[in-house]
Amino acid sequence: MMQHSPQAGILLPVPPLARYLSFSLAPGAHPGAHLRGLRELVDGQNTVAGFGRVLITALNEEIAGLRDFPALAGPGVAVPATPTALWLWLRGEDRGEILHRSRRLTSALAPAFKLDEACDAFLFDGGRDLSGYQDGTENPVAQEAIDAAIVDVQEPVLGGSSFVAVQRWQHDFSRLERMGENERDLVVGRRRVDNQEIDDAPESAHVKRTAQESFTPEAFVVRRSMPWADGMHGGLIFVAFGRSLEAFEVQLRRMVGMDDGIVDALFKFSRPETGAYFWCPAMVNGRLDLSPLGL
Image 1 (cartoon, helix red, strand yellow):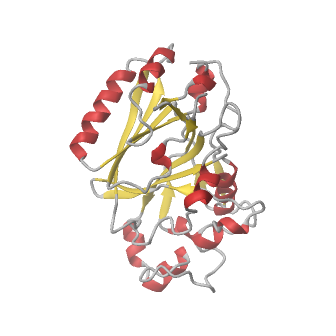
Image 2 (cartoon, helix red, strand yellow):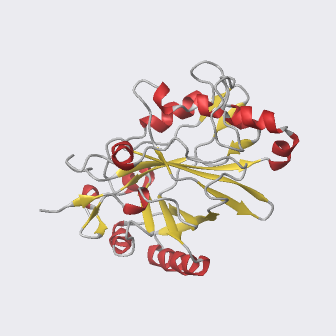
């Protein structure tokens, strides 16, 4: 009997270095053979793979629960949807090794897949966002993380797989630096110096907008976000894994004020530039399980 397990990188701590690769499908592409080749190159730990709905549709298949990322808008803010076919998260400790792994993967996927973006990321100050605040404080751990991020391995077809929401946020560092320390703390809802939650923070504070236990049902996700930088620009690659996409989406709707008209104060210094959903297949015998796609 085949033993399904999640891609291990989903549940491991974020690595020192990473690269995110996004691919679109070439016109008229027949991606099946290239995905069979990818199955041999993705170990689920150092390289995590996610498939977008456009790719699933091109294979004439359907993954229950996978849908298009929603383009949402609220008072003065907008969240873009930038769907793409394939997402790879390359995890590691050596930037040169990650570069060469990127080249091998891109070469193996051509010409059916076209590389649209390669974004490098890194661990900063022990796990802080470039704003200076600790990231992922409320992440579930141990069995609770598995329950939040992974489809039950006993489930037929999709057991052991996961869904992921990915956004690239760009920070306005100049605007952030013009804020006083207290104002910045109230935007986030935590004190930067000790990471303690501020009980009387305004309802617009990020931690109050996204408090996972405040939703019905509770909306827990496993965040594996990492800072990115390019030249003088930077921000956060937001990555949230879930057993479904529901938990992330209800948080996002509240952030833009669709629940009560209150917009997350995080938008004062940061805006999302991309947004996409992916399905991350399970592993079986050390390889990506592509059987739900008929491969």
